[in-house]
Image 1: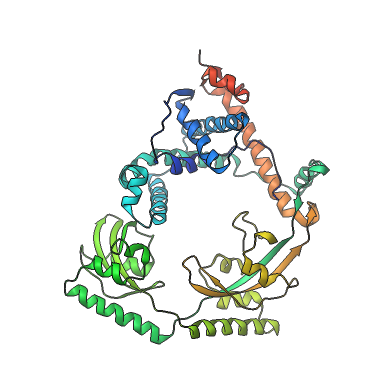
Image 2 (image 1 turned 180 degrees about the vertical axis):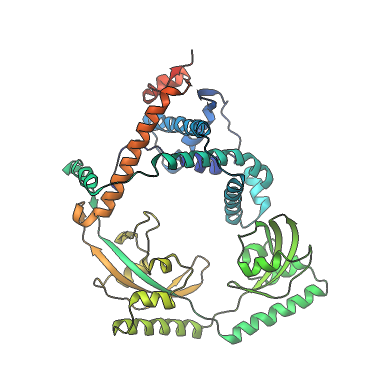
Length: 457
């Protein structure tokens, strides 16, 4: 359970989330109108309605008070944009372009790089969406940068943490379920040389057929192991430099238009690449991927090898941290934390037992603190099998929040509370200096806006 700080959250980041998910999908059926002004920024009814609609998709019920809180959030967002310009906050064009390309690419990947699917969903081409979204993203980045400037140096002392905790009524203290901290070693099987050669030979024959004039798209659709792009004849779409694995990118960017590469090895397998087009740092390619196939023996060897590493740790001839550095997959997040697994929901190292993946739960359930599990099989997002061993670092029983067991959580909540209070005070100091208009009907519906400027008579 999370410590509640206060009801009102000044969530500037909501702006970006709503724009990317809502703005392009369809035109609003509501007749739009201006409902407010802050400095040089206008607030449209659709700005409010879009955010309300988006949140309603996530939670079925929104009270009038909730909707008014969302509207105040919209006003804060617009105020931040206005104030950022007054304070000469800068965001470089290159930063905007980089963020924009990353977001567009994320959407395209979700749609399996199918531009037709993208255009059907958004009703616009990729370039039109890119242009329409650019100003919104720039405003978002201005807001974020100003917010960081305002609250970035807020710190919290031990005394403030303790005082924050003491102010929480005893009957309001959250109840924490049993939690654990775990570390892991991730080990992926190695493909045996026979299967590697089979993959190379298969791709070599396909390359010969391509060089003899056979259709690339047909061969990719029939033989490529990249099932997502195979449906599009191997086409990966337009991708910016830096978003492909280095080995693939190095070859692709050096190809002439329509030319075909030799065999290229990457972490995914073996590729033949064709360059379809290039625009500056963006390329459009298609490829055929052949993956070497793992055998049962490969998996058995991996499991036995990881268990042998565990045996060394049990006999104190190797520490868990050393084993992480020597054997764990370097591309996992935990590798860079000495093996410690972080909770993606909270960003800290604590997991409620009920939130653990079933295979992790059963691996550590009978362990005592400090003990190490046997190797267990897992699968990555592509369905590839690999093995993990876990060390149980800590375990807590269910309990009410207290400073001894939950200091880091209470400290984080206290700091967040201090940031919110400081940010609110900063806004309260700045608002009287800004010209504000609010539609009187809207203002009468939302009492929380009573201190926001004058009405539009």
